[in-house]
Length: 205
Image (tube, rainbow, N blue to C red; front, side, top):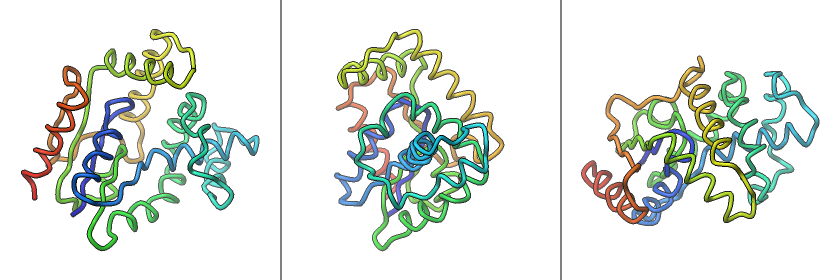
């Protein structure tokens, strides 16, 4: 069974995807980490985030540790949002994601274009969303737990900028698949959101 979980930044899709993978006994891929890996490589190599060719060269992960905590930094996240708009970068990462999705037994993947581009054949597709204000508050709280001080207003500006880039890019823009089930987590606790996600996916089994 392939489960696609898409949605904007800080919507809760990663948390829900991990919970669904545990519930279904399937492997999980956070595809956003791939783009963060490109961004981290680019920054460490002194590459220009405004150069598509430099970003494409940074798609080599042979020397990268995906457990590196720097992958979760706001700086890397901001650059990842920019380089993810490049067709050359997306093309370089598509096969890796599709191979993971189509492994025997299936998988759960979360990202921006799983249900529309990576695995349009997915058995269950969720589009997870929440208001920009709620997402900004969640991200600010997450950063605080990591010991990173961030002003809510700055995080909100960043969230809105990422939304604009993600939905407006020419290559695989963020949008719900026609057959995706919408899950708005704005007013849900983590436990309630997980329960709802499990129920929606089970309805498609």
